[in-house]
Structure formats: structure tokens, C-alpha cells
Image 1 (cartoon, rainbow, N blue to C red):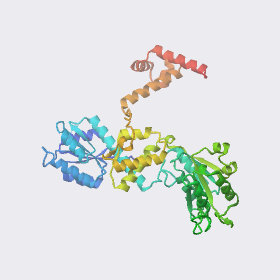
Image 2 (tube, rainbow, N blue to C red; image 1 turned 90 degrees about the vertical axis):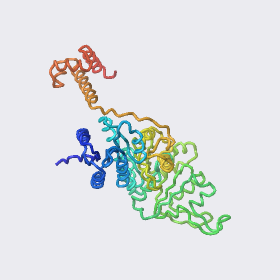
Image 3 (cartoon, helix red, strand yellow; image 1 turned 30 degrees about the vertical axis):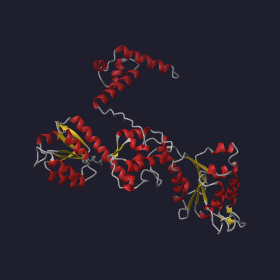
Length: 473
């Protein structure tokens, strides 16, 4: 049996019964909790935990002042800091409203209330509360939205990559991860290790482009005592350290050509020799490599060995950049906000609309790593209650307002259906009326209401006939 959706709770703290009646009429889709003074209001807030509250600043025993209202606001903030409080003030008390916002209120409305405006404010407050609640959930479980730990995504393309990695984790094949810097290649490499039979073994990562060329060989293969000046003891390399586990070769495209030969021998024979040594050492590792380069071009240009490329490339996984992962930039921004709030002891409550629009519009050339760094700076340095575009060092973008006018939406839908019926009936209005389920006089009235004449309907029909006769048009 279908369950009835739960209405969101809305706390009203107001001593004017007439206004309370108005609120009951204005918010039929909310479960209203009404109190007429501070004590009952705080009791309801503690028991019911409503996400949003509307409260009057002039409450008894000081209905003509604001002392009781500010005391109530302060108590609500201590008791339920996540609740969004909207204060109601008289037209000449704007200074009190600004003070209330400075003391933690979400927004204010003037009395007598503009109901449409107040409904919008409450809806936005509820949406922000839900977003912040999601942030806290994401902070508790970073991988909740994807099957891969440490990877937050809701984008279908990236989720497909995650599913591919899950399948490959149990197969003992070499995997090449291709993607721009900052797209999460190491997180996916770790997933290949953690989800596979080698999970109990070591995961050893080395960035082939971050170590000087003259040191890279000894880092990979290890060295014997006395192999070179300063080699005072025998030292195992990263390949040997990864025995029975996974070796992750990041930025493999930067591997010097002379080392490519030695790595190829290891991949073919699963044995190594330390620098300065003559004994072969068997090593059992799974190799996962990654690069932001086009290795095929490197091979064609003679900078990367063709045989090594195919040894590393049993399966290729291409990781989309953040700019191609619709919706993920906003999702990740909320996740990082929650994480850094916890890490740095801050309490930024969300994002200004212009900041979120800027996040969605930015190309993110540095991908997730760039977004993470910008969010860390914003949380540490931000001075307001919301993250602003300037905190992210982005230009603010004013978001487009959603057209939520129900009457206008109905009009647009009606016009669309009317035009389809006329096109499908090829201008025969009797047939069009039948398709629409209305009488012919009603159809004429609809045409007139939408500024369409019988002639324009006939023209639309002729256009439809021409398109049907010439599909290539």
C-alpha cells in the first residue's frame, strides 16, 4: 500500500491569532506547529525538530518591544542550530530585522506579510536545510553516492566507470587509467586493489613524474649496499615492497625511456634486480598505471615503447573530467563544505545562489583537486554564513530564476498540446477537437485564447504536411 508523504514541519511562534490563521491558510503543505510565546515555542522546537520556523520579534511579555523576540531567537539557535528561523517585523523595524540576521536568523519578512514572498522564503529555507542535512550525511559517508570509497559522484558516466572498476577488481589484469590530473585516478586504483583478492596485501604508489630521473630507478627497483655513493645499506624498491599486492604507477607517461626497458622485463618475467645487484628476485604484483597523456601519441613519436604500452594496457578505463560530469561539481562542493567544516571547526551554512551558479558554470581545469583546494580556502577564509563566489575566487553568476508559476506552466502545456493536435490533424479542426476531447466551439475558444487564428492553424497544418512529405527537410 502506498504511503502518504510526510509534510515538512514549520514552527510558528506568534501571539497574534489572526496571523496564525493566515499562516494556516498560506501553508497547507506543511505540518504547522503553533506556539504563542517563547516557552511553548522552545518546547515544540526541542520535541519536533522542525527545519524552519517563523517567529515574531514582539512576543509577550514584551509585545511592543523586541527583547523577548531576540531572547527566543538566541535560545532557538543554541537548542537547534540547524533550524532556519525567519523573523517577522513591522515595516518600520528593518534595523531590528538586520540585527536578527546578524544574530543567526535565516531571513526576515515584513508585516503585513506578502504571502507569495513568504512562501518563497520558507521554501528556500527548507531547501537549504535539506542540502545541509545531505552535507552532514555525505561527511559521514563519503562513498554513499558511488560504489567506490573516497569517490563522490552521482553522474551516470562516472558511475559507469565505477561499475567497470568493480568488475576489473577481481580480474588479475593490468589496467591503464586515462584521465586529466585531479580526476580521481588514484582513488580508482585503490578501489581496484581494495575490491580484489589482493586487498590484504600492500598498495604501493609511485609518481613517475615527481621523482628525479637519476633517483627513479633505485626508487622502483631498490639498491644494494655500495651500489653508489651514499648507498650505505641494502634498500628494497617500490616494486618489491608491493609484493603480493598492487603497484600503482602514476603518470607512467613520464617514465624515462631507458627505464621502460627494465620495467618491461619485470612485467614479462615478474623478476627484478636491485641496482648494484646480480640476484634476480621474484615479485608477485598487480600493476595499475595511470596517465594524463595520450600514450598512443607518445608511442607514435618514439617516446614510449610500443611493447610496454600493450603490457600496461590490458584494459583501459577512461575517466571523464569534472566539466563533463553534470551535477557533480555542486555535489562535491557540498561534500567538501561538510568535510572542511568538521575539519576546521567552522559552521558555514551553505552556498550563496551566485556561488553555486559559479561552481556549476566553471570549467574546473584542475578537476576535483582544484575544487577541493578552492573549497578548503573558502571554508578557512570565509567570513559570512554562506560561501560566496569571491571566497572561491570565482566570478559570481546570478542564477536564472525557476519559473514556478503554475498558471503560466498550465498555459504553456495547453498551447503545446493544442499545436500538436492541429499538426497531427493537418488542420482539420473537427479532427483536432476530437483528438483533444473538446467540442469544435471550445477549440475555437482555445485558439482565440492563445492568439491563434484558424488561418494560423491551417498554416501550421500545411507546414506539418510538408515536413511529412519531405522527411529530409
